[in-house]
Length: 239
Ligand code: URA
Image 1 (cartoon, helix red, strand yellow):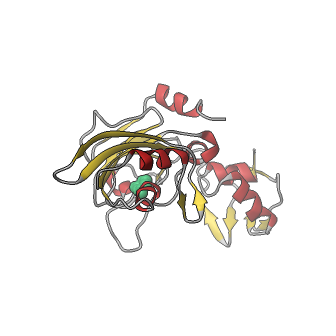
Image 2 (image 1 turned 180 degrees about the vertical axis):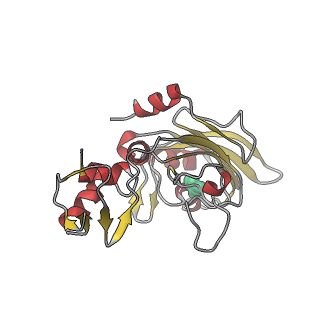
Image 3 (image 1 turned 90 degrees about the vertical axis):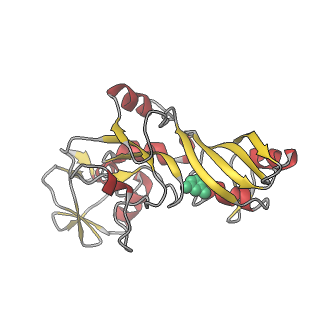
């Protein structure tokens, strides 16, 4: 028996806080009775949110995949426009979903799982998980702009948190720079917007590390399962 807010969050439907709001708003039913905070649920209870049945796969085995995301696939479980998704790449019939999001044209490290608890942990900014990106940008970046990126810039009316930034190389002839940036939030198009507010367009973007995981041993589009040691290590991160 688990508390309803924990079950909703573990299933990856919502964060614990959001689940609590849904319950308080009376939008959650257990066997067609309105749930209250702390209601206990069994694995065969039917949970509905806004009238839709939540797939209660508490007993399902958890799976964890590390994908080297190629360009030209969407990071979602289902694309309304019918484009190929990262979930389509993984040969597993279970309902899995990506941990966080990479843009259509961004490549690199992406985790996929059906473990909502771990997903919530890894995507919550308070846990400060490293997300390391390599960005090829138009223009030769200045020292003062690197300083600004490190200290935070305003995107979508909100300051970004501190990041690590390293200029890896620049090409004066082509007027491009290769910059490694480590962020801890996962805001929409965050890296592209951070460069854009300083006047640099991102030409190519790749996530080269997520926490301690990289995809050096995987070709573009290849994936592997995580080891038990890696899963335990991910669980030990943050608070
Ligand atoms: N920041 C972006 O702008 N795009 C991504 O895909 C990831 C981070």
